[in-house]
Length: 299
Image (cartoon, rainbow, N blue to C red; front, side, top):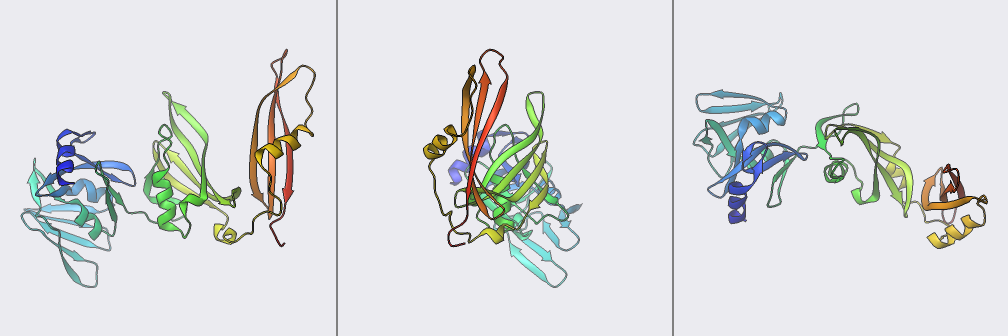
């Protein structure tokens, strides 16, 4: 791991220079270098991104968030942590160093002292200071790229802030606005799944320029934990056959697409088929809808 990290430090290019990216909730804020088998990162860049006020006083560096004070000294591997109750000395495993006129600190120890989780995947250092939203605003915005379409950090927010398994959510995007061929504004919706059916309960993350800064919860997903499976179960083929018996296609129309939806609404399991139809001569498109519903077992 150390050899790989050293290689990464030597060859990986980031927006901040040569080094290993340091990310907070997926957003790159700085970089780390390997010294004495430890990843060191610029103290100010990391702690200011975590909401701390940082000060430098002739070799002593300190950070305060109003509740916790952290002090380190250049050349020392001991951090003094004061949280209003008692002083705690923490061995960081490596000394604070001056590199290119910046104070570098062991990034894992520094972040963990701040109450964050830290992960290393061989390519980047990820810091997770997730905190529940206050009034819908996220204190630590969560990274999401519409271009990459990877909801990893949003799902991680759900895992760390609720009792729900993030695998129970279906992810979709909507309300997209593009600029210079890149989506810059949109909503990432996570809908809670019940026995393979999509419910209305979940979360909406409002994303601007790559950061989900606001979240809105929809319903109480905990109330849906133990809902029984549906009384009747249909395959896609069965549903398409049922839809074919109910839809009406004009003489000069053709079916251009069909999709099966499974929703959980108002205590019912709802199966539906959307059939897209186009006029061969007019080119006008329309849709036919077929649906059937069933209750949960033993209700």
